[in-house]
Image (cartoon, rainbow, N blue to C red):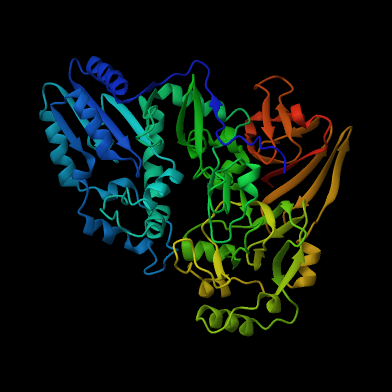
Amino acid sequence: MRKPNYDKFPYVAVPGGECVQGWDAIADALGAVVRRRGGGGGVLVVDCYTGVFEDAVRDELATRLNPTLTLDARDAMKPAAAIDELVAPFLGGDDPVFGYLSGLTLPHFFDDAKLARLRDRVAGAKDGLVLIVGCGAAMIHPGDVLCYADMPRWEAQQRQRRSEIANLGVDNHELKASLQYKRSFFIDWRVCDRWKQPLLARMDFALDTTAPATDPAAPKLAAGDTIRAGLARAATQPFRVVPFFDPGPWGGQWMKEAFDMDRSAENYAWGFDCVPEENSLLLGLGDARFELPSINVVFRHPRELLGDRVHGRFGTEFPIRFDFLDTIEGGHLSFQVHPLTEYVQNAFGMHYTQDESYYMLDADDEATVYLGVKEGVDPDEMIAALKRAQAGDEPFDADQFAARWPAKKHDHFLIPAGTVHCSGRGSMVLEISATPYIFTFKLWDWGRLGLDGLPRPINIAHGQANIAWDRTAPWVERELINRVEVVAEGEGWCEERTGLHEREFIETRRHWFTGKVPHDTAGGVNVLNLVEGEEAIVECPNHAFEPFIVHYAETFIVPASVGRYTIRPHGKGEGQRCATMKAYVR
């Protein structure tokens, strides 16, 4: 195992950027501006993404600013029962995992009469400062000063697991975290993303309360122009989002060592290295690091980041996902299948599905991958066997029905939606996929329990409607395993096409290199990972961005706006044969 040099806290430096830290300094900065604009009084609006500790923000600011009127945006919302009724059609009934993507907007959650009364109270406050805090606060008043407190989804999930927050407009702190997540995924996050996008354009300040309150550097306040400059900078140069890691019932030990993780942890199953909808982005403001959702780069600069062609197809969604699946010294992933396009559209309201692939970053000698069904398998027999296993009658014999393939380092297994699959124990997978990351139908989980001691949800009914039974072993071997062809060569480098399958919209290219490799975004976003070699450097031929250093296994994004760029071995990587895997939208 190589000595770890994986950077777990990458950031985008913002030249001249600065922020203030701690509630005293934040209140001083906000109070001075709002009083100046309001002629000694004025209205300070602190709008919030769901998951922010709104009570703490309100109390900390009210204590220091001594407003004549303090309002909580939640007081203008509809009753919880009415909100539950509003969102019920999108929750999929008793399904523990899946719902339907909501088209609701934040005003749907508010009561017009209550809003009118709060607006009247603001209008009647003639003297002194007015403070309005909460999700939707800008609905009550646009603010003489508008501050926006954002929240990355990954941190929101941690708060749900600790029963610290509730879903939008209700008090359900004690609801099971997985059900809070389901409601957030299908409803709350969609609603709040729609609401915040115009606020990002006009906010005077941004408030970072992501770090725990025990952190002496938390919270942080930066000028809106500073944050917008940081997002613009990210959209014009290579950058990385902040990775996060999670244990699982099948988790392994490889990432713990390779990424210098907590050795006392039981395992790490997942590593999310490029999922902008959930990852954070750190902006370097002097010595401080300001945290915000990385999806804000997509919201603010979709054409520069994604390119016109990709933006026209996907809108403000980032369509490519890179993550890690670690089963080395662990167990098999669940035996599973992803929905076909028409199914994900009709059943869940998602317009594209989770086509994916397994790239073997590393593998034990005995590593294998289940992919496709064996020839001659009777679908009814296999489904019946899965149902018997789920009922506890007898374990499912995956080897009786599914094709199983040996896996070694740098193998690439393509997994178009509808193909049954499972990474076996002993594998370190770089998963390259489309982004609709929740739509996995588990068919069999090897009879084990989740980390909470309960069975993980199995989705045989969804799964059987999506299995492509014609993807048998001969077809899989021909179409889905190591479809490598050399497409270009130069001095010190070779470019190989490795997939994905023709049914998938993502193209992947592997470059082996000992010298400088030319790349071009060709008007579309590139996502890359250094899959071999200690270190490499990304450079711009016309010096439009600062040289960008990446280390082994780090995923990085090259915005469409970059155009031509080069990658070569650097530092500890010099003299080594290096390799990158690159993905882009065809």
